[in-house]
Structure formats: structure tokens, C-alpha cells
Image (cartoon, rainbow, N blue to C red; front, side, top):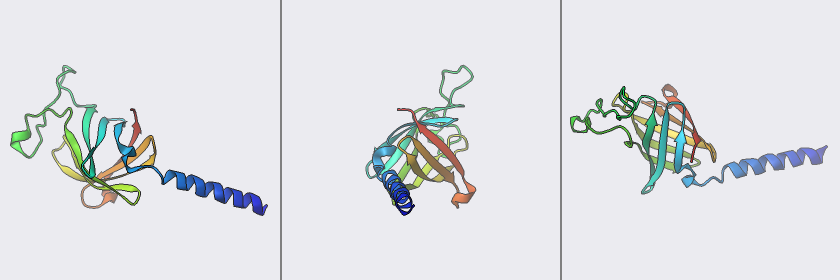
Length: 144
């Protein structure tokens, strides 16, 4: 009985140790959730992401990308939202990504961002203003 309990403990520690060994760069790639598809890339010592697709990204014709009309900077309102870098400054520390900025094309606001890789193909990020508890969590799956 004691040997089987010890074996289970060792197995659980091994699984936990394996999960923590994901490289910070494991976040790099293409991710998709229900409403968005992004490409995460390294930007110096931080991570960033560009918007590849969103459910409301195109005009009524389904082909023409919408413009960034809600941007607080009037000079940027004519740029396309497709391909826009909307996640910046995401830093990896102590097993999680934090201190990021998320620019929302839906409302023109910038939110704080944090996230964590659950495994090599599953990512959770949370955008928020002020405190994380008042934010929104997105669950992403790797697509490339």
C-alpha cells in the first residue's frame, strides 16, 4: 500500500514538473478562440500578437477589412484592423505571462493582459482594467 501511494506521488510530481518545463517561447505561434485568431511573436524581450481574424473584422461584403475607427488617435483611424499588432509588452515571469497591453479595436481602449500556457496547445489570457477579477478570460487553442 505504501509503495503504491509513493508511486502515485512520484507520478504526480513528474507530471507537475513536466508541465512547468514549457519554454517561454512555447507561446509563439498561431492561436484561435471562438471570436479571434492571433499570431504571437517575440518582440525583443517581450511577446506581442497581431490580429489575423475576428468574427466582425470585415465589412458587409465579407472581403474588405474594417478600419480602426475607434482608435483614440485620429491619425490611426484609417488603418486596417487586419494584421494590427494589438497585444504588446507581454513578459514571461515565474511560469506566466504578465504586464501585457491589449488594444481592443472594438472600443479603442487598451487593457492590461496576463496569461498562462496550460499545455503546449492551450493558452488562457485575461484582459482587464484595474484588477484582473473584473476582466474577461479567453481560452485559445494552437492552430499552427
